[in-house]
Length: 56
Image (tube, rainbow, N blue to C red; front, side, top):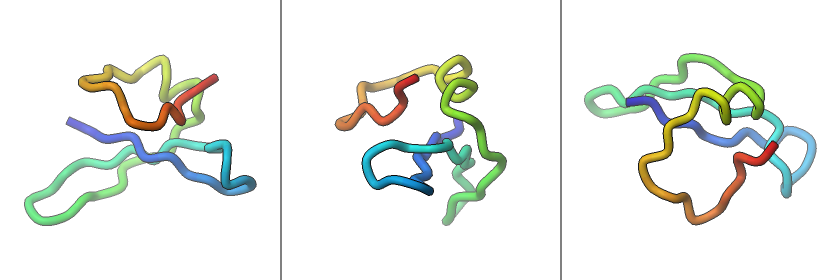
């Protein structure tokens, strides 16, 4: 399972990109960066997040 984390580069209110991370034994490893459009199309939500930052 991979996690998508928001990356805020230009604004504190709107995410610019999504960082894809894998959970290792005791840490997380960044794999790639996706645009929000690609992240939304390829995401499978397990639970509803508290804050819906993944908007297109």
